[in-house]
Length: 214
Ligand code: DC
Image (tube, rainbow, N blue to C red; front, top):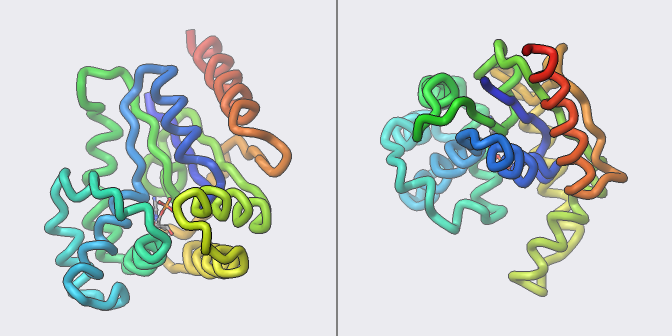
């Protein structure tokens, strides 16, 4: 069983996907981490995330421990991730890993939850359950701003908003696997829903689907 959760930056898909995976006892893969780790590797080498050769090399050399770096959550790394993610060869390198995990969840689990931008459209188009989360850019910037402010009180709202708009534009406009809702995905607009309400709605859909399959 594969559950795909896609959506733009800061739409709450990570928190949701982790909770769904725990509730179902499924494996969880945050696919954004693969792009973040690739972008972080390029930055650590003093490179430019738009440099195709360097980004491809960084993706090919990724090791599991690269995904455990706390710095991956930084905004500059998110930006670098969005840049390397626009390079088709980088996406091709990371695709096999994602598909393999989806089809062979580690730890003997019976399913996997993957979150990202193109899970329902490209990585696992066959996934029987797909969700697409959205929220207005103002609401997403607000949520991200509050998160960042806990660590750094000097963070500026307008900057957070501008960076999100930039990433939305890049992630949606790229030629390969752009952010796009799969035709058969369930769309959830989270603007007026808190994390618990989104989780409950998603779990209700999953239970209905599993019941129908029985
Ligand atoms: O979900 P996130 O913010 O951690 O993702 C970081 C960047 O990685 C995002 O701006 C675009 C890219 N990404 C992608 O292109 N495809 C995915 N499946 C996941 C992330």
